[in-house]
Length: 444
Ligand code: PMP
Image 1 (tube, rainbow, N blue to C red):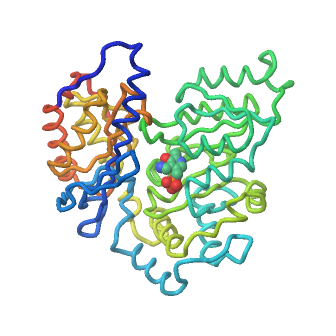
Image 2 (cartoon, rainbow, N blue to C red; image 1 turned 45 degrees about the vertical axis):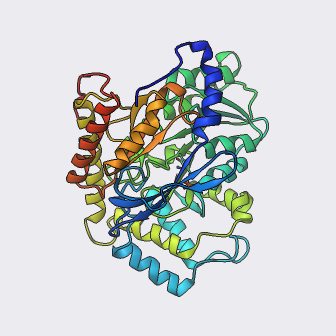
């Protein structure tokens, strides 16, 4: 378990390629099976291993570990196989079947899709919304309809792969700015307008700033008020991906816009996915009627891809209705509050135990720094051995010396679950020497 890392910085690039080829590519392919109806809380792991030379072989296939799941994006616990979500999805499956067999332009729109589009627009507080069967495609297929050659995209350096792909498909010039760094963004904006004279003359048809609400590898929250100020000053458009924040952030679960108490109309293009807080699949874009009509007609995913399967759409409708309190219960509010409490409790306890963690106190993503790539497999193996399922992330997804374990909290976790997880982390942390510091505990 001891870290062994080459000591010379110049060796790093060679070592990185060695690491990518021989270590990282040997991905563990774990089959997960929910236990007791709530995947957020417990699940069985069955092991297989995929080898990078193209063979797959089973490893320990008789071994099954039941673990506490702290790796899935099930923020509000709606990915459950009981309660109204399951019942409604089962009813819709009976009534509508599974597929729609057509795109929006080819008789693929059912009343349930219209209902979903309208509900999402109401939830976000915008004029209109369009829903898409896949979150990744929501970014990668819609972005090319928004900007093109001759435009400039200013993208946070840690943006998700779907945003990077979408940006590249536009044909626009792409420049990155340092993660969540407003000086860096402003410098890019200043450089984009001639001789630092905003609003006079500039060589770009449009400037689009692309950011996320909560960053899934960092747990950081976008500095939205500042970005809105800059985008107004430099006459740019703002594209906000709320995949990890919609449902999970803000007193009403309406994402970072709600968290900062801002007017949703300040954001030109609001994007999000249903895979995380809503326990479903797919994504949406919300904004002005003009924007959404433009996407309906021009977006490849609207024209060529089939619409969302009806039970998937129904899952979003039911969970969103609960979050909005339209079901006449307090369930949505309770889940939002439970998630917030869980996030702060877990973070505070990790701080107190001397671990180095990233991110904002209210973020449901909690990255715990392992630093050494050699600790990555050891941490996950020893956690699973003790009953904690966790995702570990290393190069190339993170810089090589910033290897980390990424915990995702859920409203479905109880205080007892979190205490159990903390006990396991402490045991494993001591085993692989993770307590780097006794840092002052931030107050929250
Ligand atoms: N945007 C961001 C920021 C994401 O993290 C992800 C996936 N985790 C996506 C888009 C793609 O969403 P989906 O998994 O629903 O396809």
